[in-house]
Length: 141
Image (cartoon, rainbow, N blue to C red; front, side, top):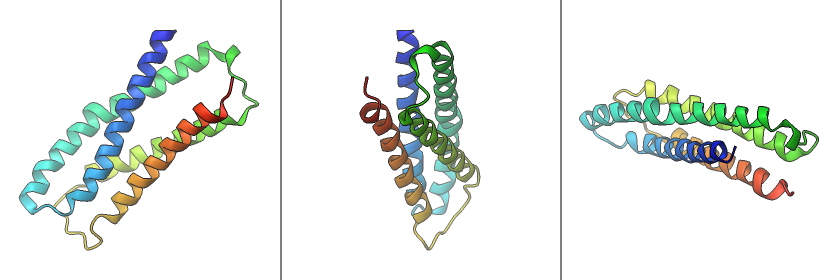
C-alpha cells in the first residue's frame, strides 16, 4: 500500500507540474510570432497528451484504488475529504480547459495578451493550495 501512495503522490506532482507549466506557457504563446506559435503548439500538444493526461489518469485511478482499499480508514463525515474531492474535481475541469485550448491553438493575435490563460493559471494554483490545505491542515489524525 505504501508503494501505491508513493506512486499516487508522484503522479500528482507530475500532473500539477505539467498543468501549471502548460497554463503559464499558453499565456506566453500569444506573444510569439506566427512561425514560433506553430512550432510550440506541437510541443504543447505532446506535453498535454503524453505527460499531463497520463499523469492525471494515473493519479485518479491510484486515488480511487487507495480509497476503495482503505475505506475503513476514511471517515466520510469529516469535511476535509469532501473539500479535497471538490478541489480535485475543479483541477480536472481546469485540465480539460487547458486541453481544449491546447487543441485550438492556431496563429493567434490576442489583444488581451493571454489574460484568460493567466487567470486559469492562478485558479489552478489556488485549487492546488486548497487541496493541499484540506489534506495537510484540516485532516488531523
